[in-house]
Length: 347
Image (cartoon, rainbow, N blue to C red; front, side, top):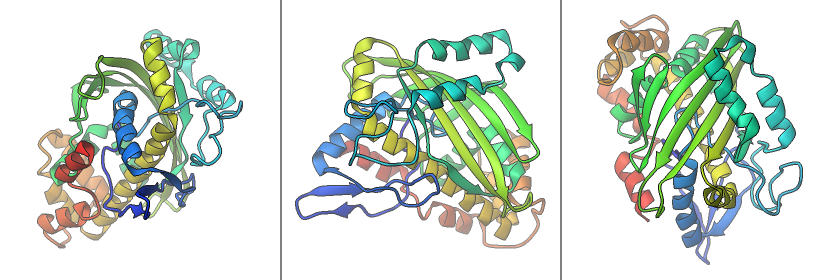
C-alpha cells in the first residue's frame, strides 16, 4: 500500500508540464530530484499502487528489485532516483541470515525460508529518524492498529488494520488492496529492537484486469541513537522489504514499476516517521489533550487507548492544554484529508 498518509506539500511544476517529485534520503535530507512527465507520472503511480499495495502499509514496506538499466549491485539507474536504500543481493542475503530463526516456531521459519527460495523484489529502505519516547515507539510498532486508528480519527487515511487474533491483523487500504498481516517475531533490547512481519494480500480493482496476489516479509529494526528514554530521544528505523508476486507476468509488471515503487516506499516511511515525531511532541506539550483524543479511537481496545495516552503524555494525563479538537486540528493540519487523497487517486 503506497501513501497511507500524505503531507500537504506543493509539487514543483515546470512550464512544459513536468512534475518534480522529491523524496528523502537515509538521513531525512532531500534526495535527488526525480522528474517525469506529469500525466505519465500520474498514470504509472496509479499502477504502482496496485503492484506495490501487496506490501505491509503500516510499517511502510514496499520493496523493489533491480530494474532494467540498473547495475549488478542493485543501484538505481542513473538519473532516476537516489534514495539511500539498496536492492543488492548481498544486502538481501545479509538481512535474511541475520534473522534469529532458531528462536522462532517452525511455521514461522518456513515463512521466512520461502523468501530465501523466491523473492520477486527486495528493497532496504533508507533510514528514517523518529523523535519520541522509546516505549511509545515500541508500542506503536507492536500495535500498528493503534497508529492507524489515530489516522482514521484525524480523517487523513482510509487504511484499516483490524486485529483478528493476537499479533494478526486484517488490512485494507480502501482502494482495492486487502490482506492479512502477522507479526512473526519481536525482540526488544535496552536501546532498540527487531520485528518481523509477514503479509499475504491481493489487489482487485480497475487498475488491473486480473486479481493481483502475493506475499511480503517486512523486517523492522530500530535503535536509539541519542538522548535518554524521553520524548526527545532519537531513534533510527530501518526496514527491509521482500515481495514475492504470484505469476511471472505480474513479476514483470512489478519490476517495470521499480522506480516509482521505491520512491513511494522511501517517502512513505519518512512521512510516518514525521507523523510519529509530531504526535509525540504534541503529547509532551498537551498530555491531557492527547488523553482525551485517544478516547475517540473506536477501533482500539480500551487498555491500548489508556496505554497510548500514558506513553504519549509522559505519564501525565492531567496537565491542561488545548482541547482535543484543537489537538486534532494541529495533528491533521500538515496532512491531506481523505477527500484530497481520493481526489489525487482519481486524477
